[in-house]
Length: 227
Image 1 (cartoon, rainbow, N blue to C red):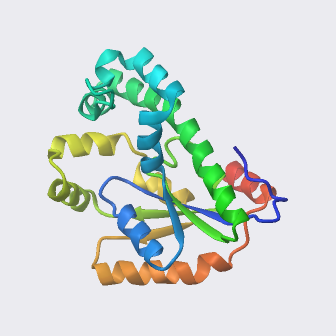
Image 2: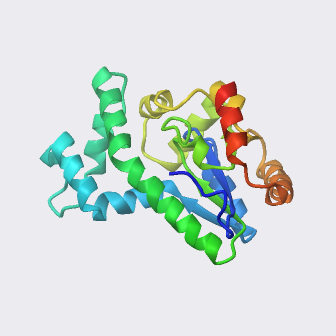
């Protein structure tokens, strides 16, 4: 879905992305603390997987009955076991999951963003973990990429979850290489330092991004051609 360049209430849409453990959610929290709206694609996806009949039907069709627990909720442990790993079947399952869920998520996110813009919001941030992997970069005017060294990312995730290092690295393998994302992101935040340094980086971007114009269709075409 493309944003209308002629929408009188058009707001700047800014994507926030980065690999697992990079700190993108921390960046989102810092932005939200400064009274900007931040939407989270993962939250939208989680809700839709439990409530959207079309998504649930397709999940059952592809993954089978084990995809749902006895109480009808999505069995996330089973889903993770199917989509994360080094086997070809894992990669195919993850691709299928993204194909099932993300079109609905994007529609919901942009619908919500349009509603916020009509209410007067001028700069809306959306956190999307797999933004580049599923080709959503053209849905945004600008993209912020949060990066950190792999070992630090693994350490962070192990501290906050029960995932093993092997499981974390398997998930990292399914995400686009940071070097590729850095080459096409509009802004890059290095989150390998202190919280104070991260806050400084966020504050700087928040002093710049709201002043930028929305990208015109020709600008988006130019970016696409250069990649």
